[in-house]
Length: 217
Image (cartoon, rainbow, N blue to C red; front, side):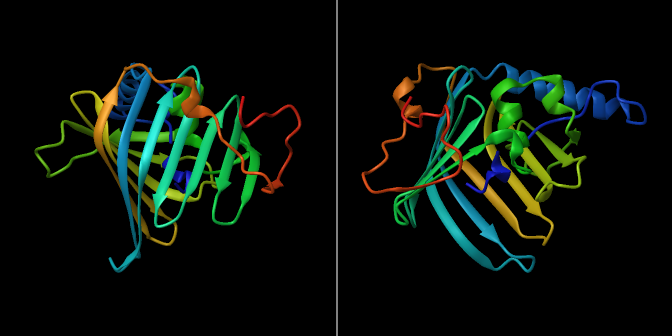
């Protein structure tokens, strides 16, 4: 996952924005707030501005509001990303490298932060509107535009079916689009805490500040 899959929303009642925007923000925050746990398999496809395929990835995602977020890529390479307790751990098994960072310091982590706390503060990082989709199979969709200039994407679209997140589309500043389709999504079921542990092989290089951070804890 380029952590731009990971999003948020604008402050309810913020001056200068329409009623539709305020309602969309509130509804999206409620949808995510009702999501205590989530797991799914995913296929992630990235295309350039002309629509040509750049990369396809497959893997799985697991989320727990009290424990964290795990994004695991299985193909075409092996990479595990875990966000918890304000820290982000990225284990690249092919490179034998573990990168540790503060989640809040990353410009593209806003959706991950919103997903993890679904707060007004997190949603205030975005302008949110309803997505008018031609696909009648989608129950509801929202388009999110970051308000800060530091974001690495210009627009994110998130879709729900019967209250469950089923798809995310991200457009970056080069007009490349990444589509993430979630398969067999399961919401509000028991998630084991072991999902948010990372087994670091011996000899792995560590990059970043690991003070007071335990990737296995």
